[in-house]
Image (cartoon, rainbow, N blue to C red; front, side, top):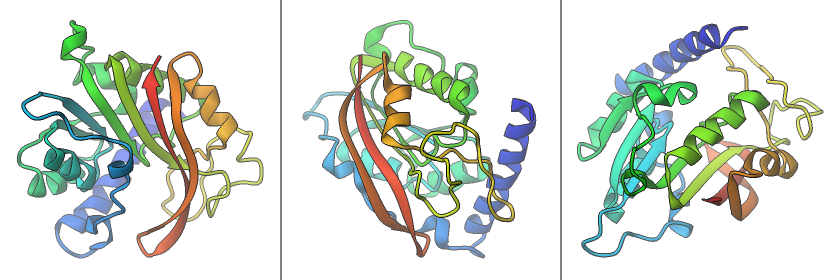
Length: 226
């Protein structure tokens, strides 16, 4: 399956899901999730301008938290409907429609290091790619961080419901269930593989969280640009 076809399918799926949240027929995607960033991200010092980029912002809950801490926030998502949902609560953030595999089109690498982002966050938006594309996305994230920039993300764990038996080692995408997008499932080994040479790991923890009324197994990761 080509990247363009995959992106088109994913876009159609996400637009439909967030359209339901926008018009009120499906509230789940608009409910407040666990504020996971609070344990990892210090607020910018008073009077200091710090930039944060929220990749795959969805309904905008992490963007809202970042704005409340005093960050200057850019929120990006593949779905225009997700951006509209985020904009409802986050008028103070810049919103851009972006494909994570084509960030140069809308979020070019800053020419000067001081114009790069202090923080990039990606909550459950990085597990839709094979190994090659995951490396590309991580390299693109690294290129947009300041030399001391922080990268915080969450991804599906290998024992998540619907994960294939070989999810801990295989980089093949898996599609389970109706209307399911092809997904990647991570192990610690796979996380180390995509961080190697690009980031220095600061925090790695496997968690079970409640999301949309069910239990979800994921990894929470914080790394610093190498």
